[in-house]
Length: 197
Image (tube, rainbow, N blue to C red; front, side, top):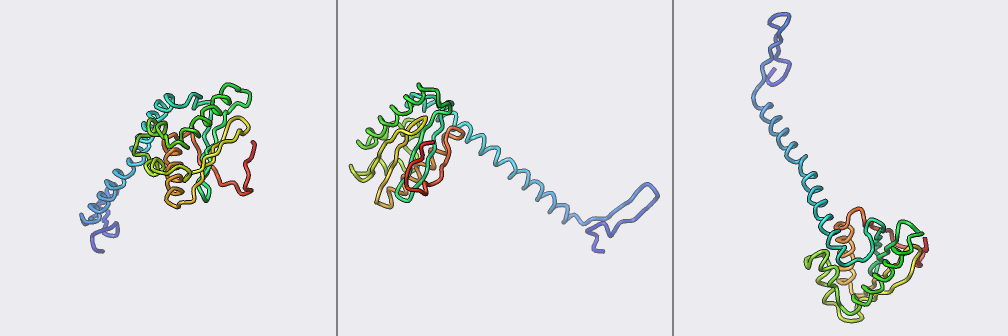
């Protein structure tokens, strides 16, 4: 009976129960409530910022990518020495989107091999994780190959330099984060080949 809980309650008449509480537990409870209320709004703020960023990236992406982001999906799969970027049309009968995806991936393969990362810089900004390291890679330090896959195309990126592998992984993560629903992180190919959907 320290005056801090219901054990110190008295029934003064049949309709009223009076309890004596120490102010300390109430202050602690109120502090906890205010703290929880403040932190519970953080994910909404972060989610709102993510949504705003993704809308900005989608708008800038239309300047660089000729295909529809709404009609396609990018899948980024990290591998031990780099990763793959697969872009596929949702509708296998949409020959226009498939053609645009393939043409675009073949173009950026050539640009990236020449050290030209202006497309990602335009869409994601020069501060995009991994991008600065990729831009400084010497010719041949990053291998970039292209193949057609069902409904689209795929680029494979590889490097032997650990810092470049880390840069590729950071770059993939940033793409997935910036594009939201239009992008997804894939799983490493366990069979060593490429599936054809």
